[in-house]
Length: 237
Ligand code: GEK
Image 1 (cartoon, rainbow, N blue to C red):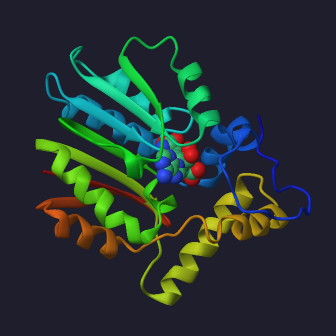
Image 2: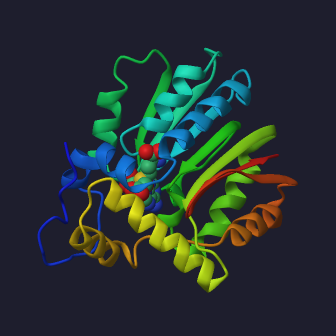
């Protein structure tokens, strides 16, 4: 279904991942996130490369299941278990529906990822999810993820990013707005969405992410993709 949530002037309430968002999510993410398809493809590549026999994979903030699907379609080891986790029951219902025909060992969990105990992990993915976690909780979450990873296990994080240089940041924001306009969003839709997610989605800079990875113990982290103001990082333990 086409995303027209902010088409008309509405009373903007705080953005939540409710049924209205679930219904348009796939269209919304494709038309709003530059490079989204490539992000998902790179997660599939990791699903081919990093899983270890008898280990666990976590897709945190799985939404409608695009990253889980990409991993499951590339996975070559039957003994690996995938945990697809989201704190929106509506999202998780849609995710399990979308993946119902996939032959993989997938467990769906509706919970806050801050409360999940991770263990025996070979691959953990947060595709556009960390940006919704309160900044003060991010270090602890990434530390727990690092501790749960097996040697040579991988963490993939994709995020909206801000540039530390104000002028460059302005250019990235206006290019992103042009991207959305090119994909059919009006000025009203763009402005209303911006207001709705203002206090909900809190982006950080590439350096803030890289420094946090190093702080928790990752020796090998890099930006594997950047498209305008969105970036995907991969860190290997
Ligand atoms: C994709 N990964 O298409 N605990 C669990 N889930 C959460 C939490 C939390 N604390 N906070 C937010 N979420 C997907 C896209 S969307 C990105 C991820 C976006 C969930 C939230 O319910 C939503 O489904 C997801 O994180 C973020 O590859 O909407 O821009």
